[in-house]
Image 1 (cartoon, rainbow, N blue to C red):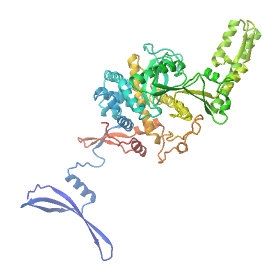
Image 2 (image 1 turned 180 degrees about the vertical axis):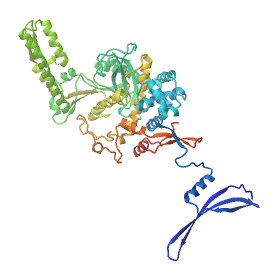
Image 3 (image 1 turned 120 degrees about the horizontal axis):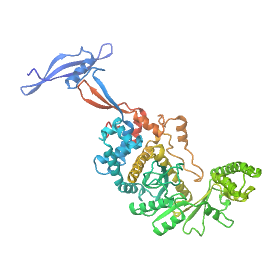
Image 4 (image 1 turned 90 degrees about the vertical axis):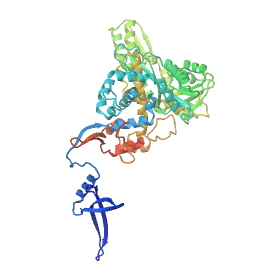
Length: 585
């Protein structure tokens, strides 16, 4: 037998019941050696360790098993602690959506593009600020993008733009194809964002949806599925009219995405009568939009089909008119909207008269004279409140007479809260309430714009001036918004989102929150008793799940170790249906 034969610790437990009836347990711990002699395995007890403390026996057992032991609290150094949970959650959802594969073949450009998208969804910032921040989250090291140069980041942005048609075509098939979109509807709307600087050729002055009337802007249109999931985006010069943008959407649907028999849903400014004529000539696409005020007034004439008696029993009704052959017209009256418009009109009329009174007094006193000067002063007031249509004016060089056009006011008031939808959707595909609900789903696109522009993605300010870079920036933000849309739905249980909004009995009246959502809001807890967060607050909380680089011993290995997740963090990854990854790879 060799003296260097390895030894090991064995433990034996023996139960014994004494004469007093009490069961006693005896543990024996032996240091033993196994060896082979004459072809047989022999065992030898080297020492009896039973008298040693349990902790010492455990240390000896682990040491003999080859484990390196250090003194508790000594020679353990946390060399770095980096936020991890938020990027891990976004990365996990990106993997489930197949986003890396959409971005192209494996390589540095794809990794940088993916890192830019995830960073935009987590902590929007300029490209240069994002590049610097990669050193401070696990995303940078795990995707091997930390330390990337400015040139490499912009090259990745350019690569992303070259993939736009391919990516959007796959997203369209995934969200708008016949199997996944049985309603055969697509939502489309246009928005804008202001620009600074003078070099961008896309930056033009136009109708600002941001209220920045003195700045140039760009416009961009988003195509979504009926639930509002972003599918495609197009960027236009800031002075592009809505119908022109709509033409680009139709071209994309027909030519790029090769989709047929879709119903394009857009507001009355987007899908105009002229655009509908073009759609008819093109064929293969339907529409759902709303009539403009003059068209509604024509239907509400004395002999027209739109009469107030239609709304005696319910807030909507189908009508027909020869000017709209082959289409369905659905008249709706929203009482809440009617009350709002009536009150607003009264306030504007009073405000207009209050500002016109001093002008009238100045004319009477002779301090203001000349029809041209009087007209300019009056025109500014009427233009500010857009109330010129409701007043009769008589202006001379020395007099000013102002009276309300009460018949005109009454005629407009009679149509308060009324809107009329026009569509090609056949009755067998959607009933009246279904058509109204489909049109109201345009609110989902508005939610996307809020997420894209300010709440989640911060598309603005745009810090680029080259046309291709501006387009690439908007497409990058669009992909981050697509990712965020899925994240918001997945993590709805932990936020104040209404997970199961009640079905409307009346599609015209405003939606209400479910009782479960009201309970969540009042208690500020989920159904499982976990604290609720806003979506952004939840990302912040996930970021507190850090990855710590722990070094054992002065020259020992450095082992990445996650902090202990909170119950909310654990639940978030359960909802994502993914384990909490230690590394993103």
